Image (cartoon, rainbow, N blue to C red; front, side, top):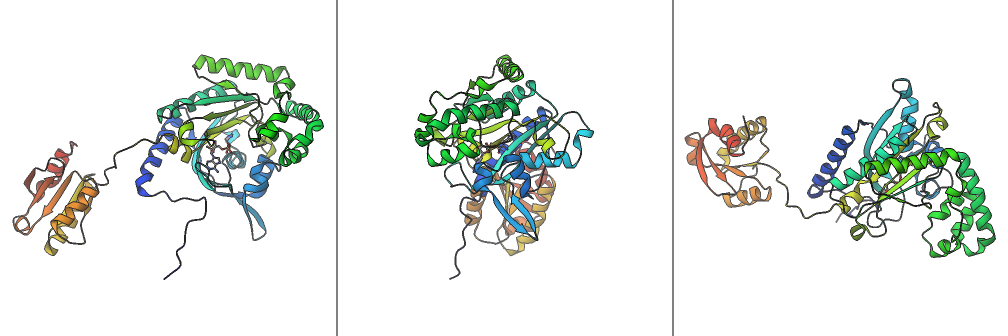
Length: 423
Ligand code: HAM
């Protein structure tokens, strides 16, 4: 026997039973984005490794240990771990700022991170996300958060919680880093080994630590707000006031720093459906990153964006749904002579927009009707010997069980009428 090959750990198949729900969420997202003036961008799945090192940051978990990187003909390449860096690269590469003062893009697609797989955390996962270039906010920040909350609500996700924070401009961050290091250095021995190392590389990440030991050491630590300047204070106050105007409930979490280095000013996360997702209940992460475009060789351009994990949205919005109809009509020829006419009937039904499957294998009427029911077909077109001779078919209603003889030339109109569709 041949050895059975399995999918790579943490990378999953989506079978047809489930792909309908994926399509529905993707379509709802595309619609929500279109309503808000965003257009779709598609960027490659593989990017130069330095793109992610430079933007996400050398001392982040993603760059340190989660990237799928390889060298191909002397080129350092990486399977994209997220969409923001690639979109900004495209924005700069195509000189998009020359064409429009504000650019609004959305995207959807697979991302890759070598994380420890668990429910809601995978090595290949899908994000839906959006980015805005050219608007310094905070009006568009609030609008983005609000649009997201409405979208998540429309998916029926319960228990949404919006966390917002600001980490101010780059100077604030540097000032705060110093304050935090000064506070934690005397307590270094109380930190976990990981956080002791971060104290030297990326101290803000310690705030994100899930370890009770680190959290205990952080009690009484200064928050980033203690390092704010006037611009930071005004930007954050305005964000909150816009959210209040929009009626979007939120909670300020001064410890929210997020795991990617590129952020400035506004940060946010949206959690939800804790009962279904447990600890991995962060549905959306996002924030402002005013330095990235310039860092990639473009002009100084403010930017903000978010991404949501599609798998998590699907778990969070899980509902018992009836199996979907695969085809409207099933065409059942009872013997070989009927196969040719069955194929032309199938062709004619599809030309009229009626989804149908033709049984091209042969078999008893009973087995063919079993197949029709499995496909949730509304009608079966049965071609028996007697009908064929008279150029007729039997049209059987698989829900009401009524059956009528219809002339082959009338079948498409009859099927459309029964399905309640106009010709
Ligand atoms: P992120 O927080 O790394 O941000 O990811 C955003 C969302 O992607 C998470 O909240 C989660 O729902 C999903 N996600 C992340 N990793 C995994 C995984 N291993 N398995 C399943 N789902 C996952 C970003 O990626 C930023 N690019 C967001 C952004 C856009 N910031 C500005 N613009």
